[in-house]
Length: 406
Ligand SMILES: Cc1ncc(COP(=O)(O)O)c(C=O)c1O
Image 1 (cartoon, rainbow, N blue to C red):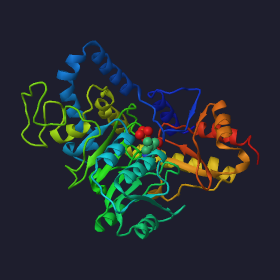
Image 2: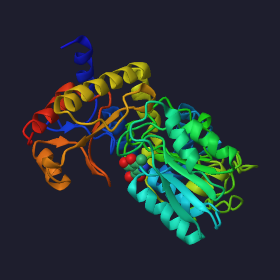
Image 3: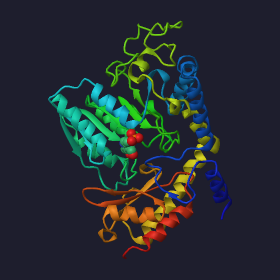
Image 4: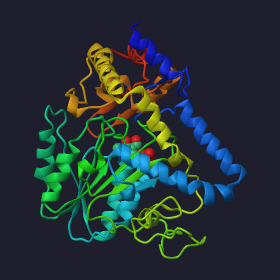
């Protein structure tokens, strides 16, 4: 073992994990660092012991700090940053709250996350619009191939473009900034599903130039589940209706006597928000402790060093391509070009390995957590390799694959 491997396995001890399980599914949920878990648990103890004091007096400054630090880390501003429970709730808010009107169409790629497609299908139906998808190139070697496919699909009828920054089934990274620029030139609104981007990619949200950027913080950033966000791009500050009408609905009516009543929609208020963010974000009595510890999760990886993390992820991607793909002659479903992949590598797997239900069971019986994804045209095995993934876990997957028919 090299020194690097020794130090990465010791890092794993600082993160909650089940040592019996080969955890190759950060793409669904990340593991939570012990320091982050301890802090969220301490906050929940405070909340349990004194809920009124917690919500009314202790929470506002903490919420503002979390908003400021998280927004700064992600390359956006606190005044445009709205926390959400997860990326699904952020996209639901936009799909339900954006005043779009037909006729026209909502365009998306053919690799979007299933229930997010349903979300846009419902929005389209309610508004007299048509949902339409375009085919992404399977294994591009240049991001411009993706831009060309998207641009060729845009028409005068296209009102909104929805796409993932990192595709869920394959882990392919889309050129989000280029896609948003092309859409903008044509007067098309953009909503980006950045579920996987924070913590996986060096993300600068405002630089992407989306009208609405949404993401999860519980995947690659390693915050506890319950933390996601959306941002409001230039010109979109006042377009959304909230999903949930609560005390943020009327900014000028303060239920608890706001002694720091704000003056404008972007001024910090007494609740750790601004009138604008609170309008969309506040959903009554909810446990928002996961939001408050996002800075702790950022701090955890910042201390490890982002450059070092990215190098480790690239090393593991190469290892996965060789130990799984090359060894079993599996076609790659994730481009190997550095700007087209991150920390997930997927392979097309043969039918002779059985259906997905059977295969998932077989893998889980061996304590391997890795998704098998049925696509219309092929079945995929998707390996997530965050910095804490060990080569030994990928080898355990390989050992099970070696027992399947060849
Ligand atoms: C691209 C993408 N969008 C949306 C989601 C939904 O995430 P959540 O359940 O945290 O809202 C996922 C989950 O894996 C995803 O990969």
